[in-house]
Structure formats: structure tokens, C-alpha cells
Image 1 (spheres, one colour):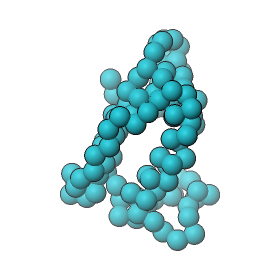
Image 2 (spheres, rainbow, N blue to C red):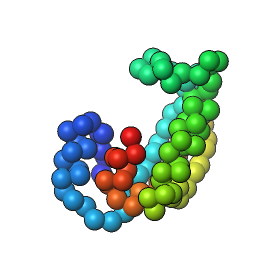
Image 3 (tube, helix red, strand yellow):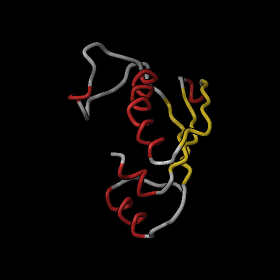
Length: 102
């Protein structure tokens, strides 16, 4: 199922009270230089690549993922879409734990 993680869709999924793990497929195109326009307070002092920015995100969220019983199942990198890309399968112990990470 594709999920647009808008506040309304998140609430609707949580209301379904799904019990058990979910697996999230991330297909990401990575920018040459990460774009922090929407969250300038998170921008590093020196510009970094999209891959570096995504790696920082993973470093930040992985402890919570693992503490709540989740795990990264598969990581693959490549050059799809004519620019660097990454694919990840991430298992969360429940939809609630996935949304509460934010």
C-alpha cells in the first residue's frame, strides 16, 4: 500500500489499530546537494550531499527503530533515475511506532 504520510492519512492508519509489524519500502532519489529549504534549522554549516543527509537521518532514527523492535531488512544503492539512489526495506514493529518516531 502506498501511503502519503499526511496528518490525516497517519491518523486514519493508526485508527485501524493494525496489530503487528509493517514493512516500509523506501525508493529514494538523492540530490547532489541536500535541500534544507523547508527545515533550515537542520541544515549543516557546510552543504552536504543527499546521500550524506539521508545517512544522517538513518543514524538519528535507527536507535529508535531498534529499541521498538524494528530493523533495516535490505539496503541497496545504485544510480536509478539518472542520479544516485537508494532502496531500503525497513520493518517497524507496528504502524504506531513508525509514526511516533517523528
